[in-house]
Image 1: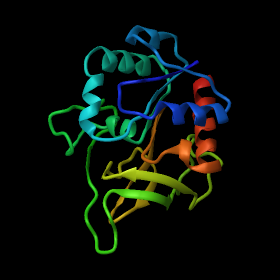
Image 2: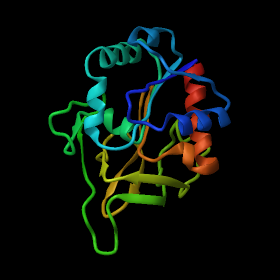
Image 3: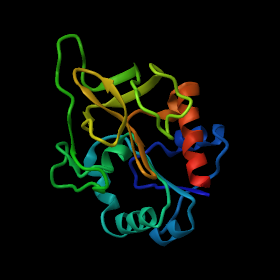
Length: 200
């Protein structure tokens, strides 16, 4: 079973529906110790980075221990930003820190609005387990004002005023800035790829 973390900042219903379409069952752990039985962990999230402060302490420790033991981790939208060290949106709140760097606000550009809301295309020049079978230029659905930097862990980029990390992959740590559960066939394929990673 895959654990879906509920810290009060995610639309869990849509994420559950997306994973159901991908052929997976999710459970929502009530206590951090339940993560020791999980085949994979999903951290969703929308809104302000400050909301991730609810994960500080026991949840962060349990997630980090599970990942160190080999459990795949998948961050979605705000959950992906949390994989990094932090965000300018909430400078006093630490991220998980398993991917170096911090998130910054998308720059204003003439003709482009922030937040970045709607469909945009992925640029994924290198093979990736998470994006296996997802074609170059696949359209996915975004809604965000802050974004992660392009680093060595970036599996796909997107552009909205500037280039940013749309997907990351580092060993068995994965993340997407967009919402795969709202991204049609391409998004479901990404969820299936994570389910496959969780099954080992």
